[in-house]
Every structure is written in structure tokens, then in C-alpha cells.
Length: 141
Image (cartoon, rainbow, N blue to C red):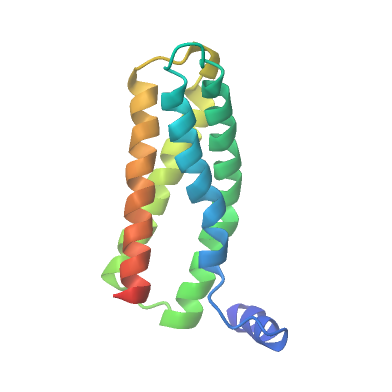
């Protein structure tokens, strides 16, 4: 199936990896979620917590296609070889997905305060940075 997808993409002139094009949705939404969450602690900006929560949900919806595209690129470009950075990316992606699902279930943005849930928002950005860094190292060395 992987080769069929990449053969089709080659025929239409798309010769690049698929995964990097999709990473902007979940990674950008994670960053937005964190910025809006922390911004909601500024005076009179409490409503930003809801915006951050909406970013979290949109980022979560973007995770499955991004992870799938990463799997396809891994199969196509690396023949499914278990390189250290691939394993790191898989672990970080799984952890980020778990944190995002947990927040989607337990967070009540209308009651946002500096608590463990906000700590999970901060953890999301650390996981996202780790994913981006390991992906950059994988591609650019």
C-alpha cells in the first residue's frame, strides 16, 4: 500500500515526504493551546482558555493523519528500519497523544487556573519541541 501511495504522488509531481506537510496542524495547535492557556491568566483575558481548549481539540484531530503520514514516510524512506530517532519520535508522539486526549477529557477551560491541567499544557509544548527536534535531526542530521 505504501508504494502505491508514493507511486501516485510521484505521478502527480509530489516528490517530497508527506509527513512534514501535515505536522503544522497538530504542532501549531499545541503551541496555540499553550499560549492561549497561559494568556488566559492575564487580567480580563480568561476567555482565552476556551480558545486554547479549541486549539487542543483541533490539534488532536490532526494527530492521526500526521502519525499515519509519518508511518508511511518511515516505511518508504527508511524501509521500516528501527533507528533511534524513529523510536524517539514514536514514543514522543504517543505521549503527546495521551496528554492531549487526557486534557480533552478532563479540562474545563471555563475554570482554568494554574494547576496540574495547566502543567499538562506545558508538558505538551515540551513534547512537541522534542518531536520537532528529533524530526529535524532525523532529516538534517
